[in-house]
Image (tube, rainbow, N blue to C red; front, side, top):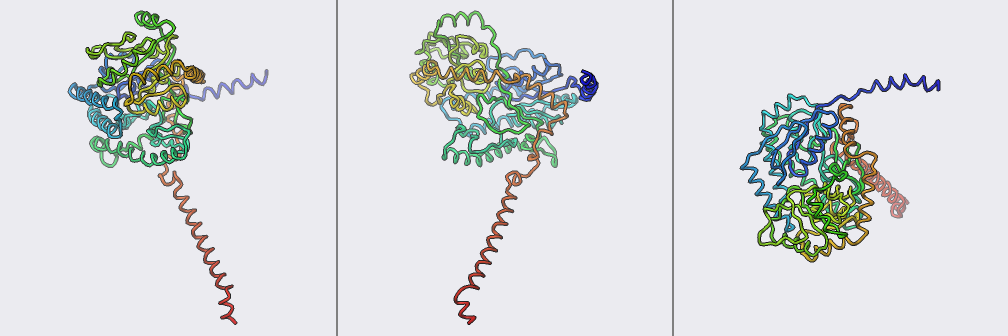
Length: 525
């Protein structure tokens, strides 16, 4: 007891030497709508609710989500609009893209067109001198930026604020942040492989590894004109360097979905920010659900950015498939855009907007039909709901391949959508108990993490602020040239040594042979 009492002053002294974190000034950047905004809004609210002074720099403002009015935020927002003319042009372009996606025509060209639009928007963003000067005068301690859009890095650099990058999905940019994984069991983005690869899968993964560098260079090139216009010669940043300069990378993913892989200490996985305990649904929806009896109901949503289906054939096949189900169906679909010549199946309730998390937490839910966005899948995992996916673009194919590999559901490519096949697949996922059992197991894994995602996010942000950055987490490889990282100089040195040794051995053997040969002895005699 005396010893314990003597230790108390020492413990108190050590405690006082650790600086207590004061409320920090934090800037959040969001230049992409849809689920990207929902995540950045959630991050901003978490930081604000824990005593930090938060401001968001937001592009677009109202209208970022179809048929969804942004709720009033408790933190201040600096926002600007790209103009009604451009917003309409962007919506028209997105609708045309949707038609291609629903026919299974998503490719690299479509992705680069989208990146070109982000580059165009970035140029407008960097011309917002009044807002940028206002934010620069705010002297923020840290920025938390949306890491998918390269413009976020350029704006943070322009403001001179250290930043944490938050990525909204799986490790599609792992190579850009130095998180290369062994190609033998870490599938590359868009490879559509699992972590269990046969020989030809590994060949494919290796070939795609080389191709991924080309794609990265194409993305960088699409923003080069913006960089040249807004940054002075001699101090122009590169997207690649700015991504490595992030104090921390946080990914919206969890290993309940993602395949296990090695990670650097400056990379954290905090998936499921939008998932949580369910709240009661509206009385109207509860009455509709009650009519389903023991059959239950199906939740249907194709993402925050797709509120209706512009391809009539696709809509008819989905509607026809749902009509064959005994379950009720709650489908997020803009009712005013439903074609008048198509009769809605009697078991379907169309809603302009739905609280997906609350519906997935309802005891009568049987299935989630989804595009395969990460937020939707994490909510399904949290509540233990099986999944049937219809991947359209982006990371959705890769996400759903992981869901299928985990045996938590399956998916139908959009070009294969046909009412009978759709209905049969839904029945199989609902009636085969293995899918539900796996979904519940994944839910237990997710919920039993040592810290919930909001507390882990807050803890890491405050850790970076208190430590004055994340330099202690970043590996020295960030400062090495590529040939040193891949040990090419070492391999060249060793190869040279081996060649020289082999050359000397051959020379010595030849001399010995010539010395000991019979012809030489005869000449000597």
